Image (cartoon, rainbow, N blue to C red; front, side, top):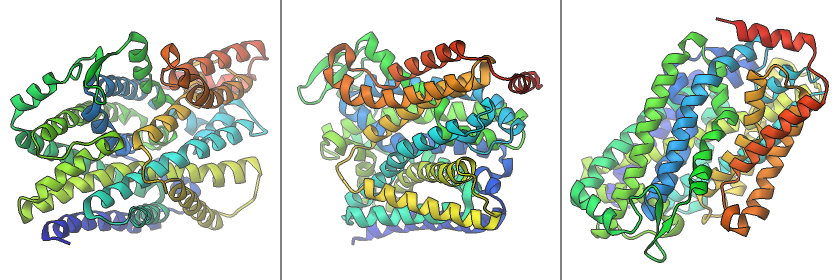
Length: 510
């Protein structure tokens, strides 16, 4: 191993040790399952904002998004980023405060539990369905994070992909199992800072290596459709491809996913004072816009660096390692530069780990709290419950490692599917539960099932037909689930007075 590689590794190991230290430090603050899964609702506004967005962005921000921009230009990545930015803001604006108040009013610490409590579902059918969807979509989502870590160490140090992936998973499992939600949120806050530093360093260094701003622009202009918002660049043919209004709407639909993301909604539920959500919204929205813009531009810069011969041309899923390649180039400029390159790589680790820890907690709570306690009514004391929760978290992580065993899997594609699954199955239910008094459990059950099943149908049966059918599965699945929820609610008995009274009370809170 060269001196520059050792220096990068030192930076990354220091970062990993910091995360482990946070988990150990906060481990004694988990006395109940409420503490383990929701931090006792004690998060401050800055930690709430940045942990929510760090857990949201995942490796997609530093790998998936720049990779898409690198290959096909502004349109694919740009419309996705716009949809996500709009979804982020609207989620903070209309959902955050209401779900914080509602989950406290009906004593819910998980999203599946909230659904059943909101609709008086004594048989816990909603809890069970929601918990199953969380496992179905979160486990592969977590696997994508493990895969990103494996690719990172493999491409940089030549380390065996599987060994690197397992090592990364062990670190994530350790601090998450030790410190629970507080550790995940605190480390996510730290990780958002590291991710920001990585974006800034890559932006500045990459532009210089490509020959300056003018060289980056000239290279992008030379690729047909690369800078257009109505066309995209096809790297296989070297030609421009039209970006239809339907495709734009489909891509913007990424923003709909926010309304159903359990790991983000949990941050809203965990803030210490809902009056501070306005501060969180502003911080989160500004950071998301700036970071995603930087991610798209870095992809464009990376393409210019390839054209200038500074990094090798990347194809297919290899494009997702463009920031890794830039960091590797930086490391050749001496020891200080190699240490800084290590910070960039730690940023990629941070983006991955900040999502994986939250997903592991959400998936674990689905099994331990929602299925074992709420559905099967097992009586478990708090100490044993904490142990069981940690063991389940470890078990789910092991399944994630097995799913990530294929080193050729695309981070972007896995995230896209899981994102759509949550957006369609949970999004309409969350919105109607919070804002429509007449919605009932029959509509919620029907809508949740429709959304999740439709994701699979559209992804694997309809979308492959191409043409007008080739749109992101989240859009049709979300709209159909919403319609089914409304229609079934209206066709079945109105909710009980006790439920509408709670709805009115939460709505009237100032």
